[in-house]
Image (cartoon, rainbow, N blue to C red; front, side, top):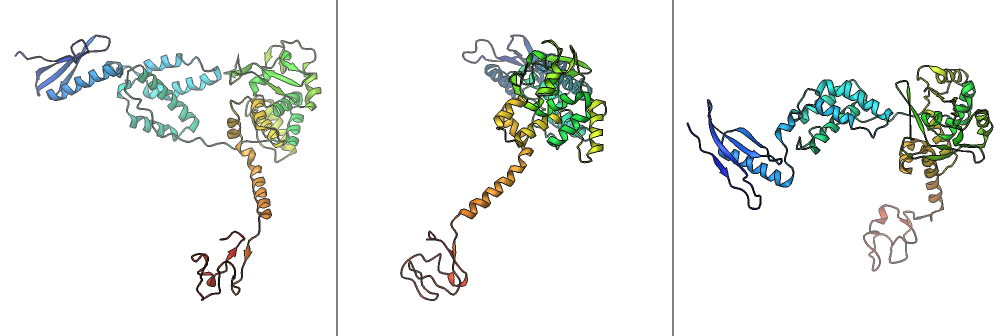
Length: 424
């Protein structure tokens, strides 16, 4: 049986034919297929339309998408998450090794096992939400958000490549990160920890009073210490990833100058003695120190000994010494902008947000200031019930007034009025 081909005429100004619609017979009855050209001029088709009207609407939509530059090739959505995932990972060259490693782990542990074999065009928003909710039951918010970010990032690229019209992963509900309460040491506790750290005493004091990150401190070279001005110049960051040291720029890619207090001068000079400009300040020549383990190593031993002396001594990590430096500087009255530069934060707002809890004591100062302001304000005059005001048109109860306000004073007999000089 021959079938007629219906050609949809070209739109004015578009040049070529828009496409054609052809009927064909199946066991379930007549169906229609649409033949059209993609933006790359290759011909393709879409089959299975039950009515000619549905086929015409589909073809019209294709031509509109082509003219607007929003055309998405249905065959491109057959690519799997694994195909695109490895390409996406290889493009993350902007990440430092310490940032790339958790991303790669999230892909390998959480994303690829679940989504790797799925064509991206088949992924539904509800499925992504169910996956996020499922792993939230057994993993931390940080782990969940990172895994979700990998999947969403891969699908974002698919949208930009015109493989998908929208990203089905966007808009799901994610768990909230609970801000951990930080441990801040006071001056006495810092000194106690430094004493118990023994040969690492200078390193502990240096971290607690400069706020350098661990990688910045162990990557510091003798030539970048100015003992005359008591300054160190942070230009490198030695980050440990899987027992391997990667040397790069500081976290924000910006070098900075950081001061250290005078009481550290003698200890730091002793640390530099006998070393060349290229030697590490805290290390053996060019051998970097490894980051102390949370559950063992020299820091854990020093903390345990400090707790034996002071039962209130908190359990801390090496990064808590950076938090301590911020706390001590702020408590000493340092300008927030100066603290931001010392820590290498991108902005003063970031410093304020990060260490908002350090400013809790300032709330007491706000209350005290309000007390002082209230005490110095003019005192209102309280009139007793049995005394009637006689000025400005106010009369005794029961008598009508000829002048002055009425609404405010009409019921004064049942309640005392508080009248100041500017009450009316």
